[in-house]
Length: 435
Length: 144
Ligand SMILES: Nc1ncnc2c1ncn2[C@@H]1O[C@H](COP(=O)(O)OP(=O)(O)OP(=O)(O)O)[C@@H](O)[C@H]1O
Ligand SMILES: [Mg+2]
Image (cartoon, rainbow over all chains, first blue to last red):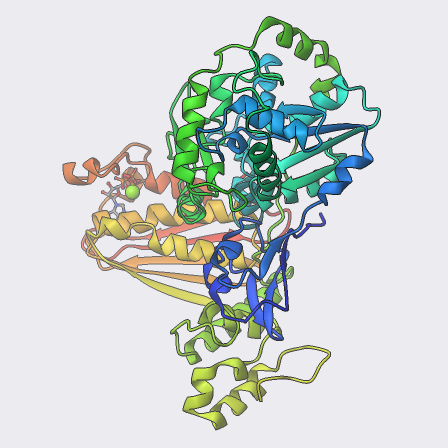
């Protein structure tokens, strides 16, 4: 399956400082030819690199905001987290009016999809523990690094996608442009993957971009937008759906034993354990989210994640516990057309094998081990690989040369030459570097 | 490809570290997840037995394109009645060991279930030596 990379390195800003490379949880980054490079197969779009970069050299691709106006009906699928980006001086209703002001004609909360899924009684996976498929970076992480856990991943189509499908049906698809406002690059990648099977989205807008637009509108129209215009001018969601994207949000009201883990390194630590103790764990459901505190910690968000989380929880207390009857009827009307799209299968796409042929992989592993022994083991990163063992692997794969090791070069340049002859140079079209 | 790990008696905090390291190797070699899982389960049981019931020992793992061979050897005290020990639910685990969540008497049966072949040589007063092997050939999945 082709994989779409959403994180782009702006080469002119990159200083090869290695911050991103050292932060990357999957070892997907190398510094090569003067700037950071992201290896597609290993990247899970978690955005840690973007957060770590002191030079703003990593950007998330998005659709141009202007693309919105190609469409007659301009639909925003807005995660509840968006409303929590603002402090209390603006009400949800005012934020919503600002969304219309900047050009949207319809607004649907992304989490409505959770209520729709509940109303349709969609059956998901039953391989315990079920791992939530809500966070796209976690799904990608499991697909590429923990393939044996793939059968545990939930199959229910993710809420925002369900909402988009519903909106498209309701609006009868003519002149409809549906845009998701994303708190993270993971979602963008997910939509590109879905696009192959027919996505309900026409584009993705980054939350920070929309936040800026909405903030401008709010500042200008503060008085014009009524604080409360009675009802929300979009379909509501239930309170428990609204907090879904927060850490622990998916556990509310769930029967059985469940566990929520946030932050990608914590998630990896647990998956490593689960992989070995799959049958022993007494957990029925696992909520795993790549960002700290959940989606309020997404790298495209604007506000302090703790305050955003608090506002969202507070808002949820005023939302209904069940959807109003007219909305339920609207939802049930589309059930037949929606049902076959309510689950989405997930495949494994292992990205960690040294080679497809086990014989070759064994040969490379032996080589990695010998090279690792020769390397200093201080993981300085100056060679352009995140750790000494990663460099060893890169050399064994023909993607690097031992000459790149600064420490060895300083210690014994002659020896490095000999080793480079034994273990081979970097295989590129260009002349070898670092001589 | 060979890897060796020493296993200390009584150190339950380290239980699983050898099987975990071998798991990572097998994944890097592109071994199918189902086979990796069987190796990890069987080896973990053997590892815990060395920690819980023996004076300590080592685990040696040999991987070829055809199979994974595991050798788990300790320094005693040996198993007096192997047939009895192989029975599901039979255990001499102390209360302390049971409190750690082990001692259900399922370790040896689990090894038998998961390995494609299992050989044990042991006797009272001798060391215990366990050899397990797992086929990596396509369609030779052994245990399903
Ligand atoms: N390496 C060993 N050295 C000495 N005795 C052993 C060894 N391995 C197993 N035994 C004996 O065989 C018995 C059965 O082992 P088995 O692994 O099946 O169960 P257990 O270790 O008691 O419990 P469980 O593995 O379910 O936690 C043990 O209780 C112990 O008496
Ligand atoms: Mg045992």
